[in-house]
Amino acid sequence: MTGTIFDVRRFSTHDGGGIRTTMFMKGCPLSCVWCHNPEGISVEPRPLHFPTKCMGCGICCRLAKHGGMTREDGGVRLHPDRQEDWPALVDACPAGALAWDSRTVTVGQAVEELLKDRAFFKYGGGITLSGGEPLLQPEFAAAVLKGMQEEGVHTAMETSLYAGSEALRMVLPHLDLIYADVKICDRERHRRYVGASNEQILDNLELLLTSEKRDRAVIRTPLIPEFTAYRENIAGIARLLSGIYPDVAWELLNYNPLAEAKYHLVDREFCFKENPGRYTAEEMEAFARIARENGVRNVIVEG
Image (tube, rainbow, N blue to C red; front, top):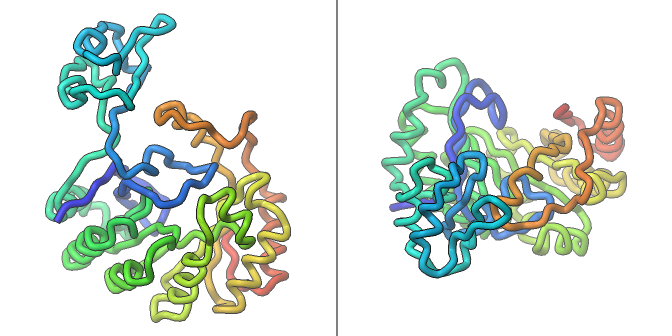
């Protein structure tokens, strides 16, 4: 069995306790306009060009037979939609400025790569599957999680919950911790800014918060200016969560402006023309107060 991943990040202190290694799985059925990992949305592998690594040697332009690589404005431009022998072009780049955005690995290879950091896991760390959306590859995700648990490693996952309930049931037995996003309460706004109805997400949310794993779940809401970070949304999600399980852990994530830098790599347009800054501690506490006033007792504020 194989899966497609686009990154492995080591020595993380987020998304679970201790020092963690996070494996990012490629492909997401949603299209949040603020997506922090736009390179993980498409399920199809594609080449990327990194201008900061490019030497300007022009080898790729000479080898490209159909205009997949061209010289423009004193540099090199990638046209990934054009038919080329992309593996050959990537291999030919002497500086590593051309690279694939993902790779296919077996379950065994994934487990082996994650276990390289097991020396750090004994201090309370572990591994986290993220994305993209891990539940888009549920069999692979479940097998990797199971393999890590058999090695005595703490397991966690980040998910949007936008998947069939069977996919969620497949991974739950192998998770020590699950982070689940609930972004927008209103269905029409969710469809407009996230790219799909939130009906399946809410069904899976109830499944999760009425399961034996509910105390190992952390619900997350990213606070995105204009899109999620407003009183009615925070209050609505709080009432929804408290109506299922008032003791649920709910984490409010501060806006992260760093995602904008990735959008040129995948030819996507970022949602803000002028990128806002992070919320202050006082503003974050004001959001948390709304959450508590609407019934959630365990609110976590991520600064």
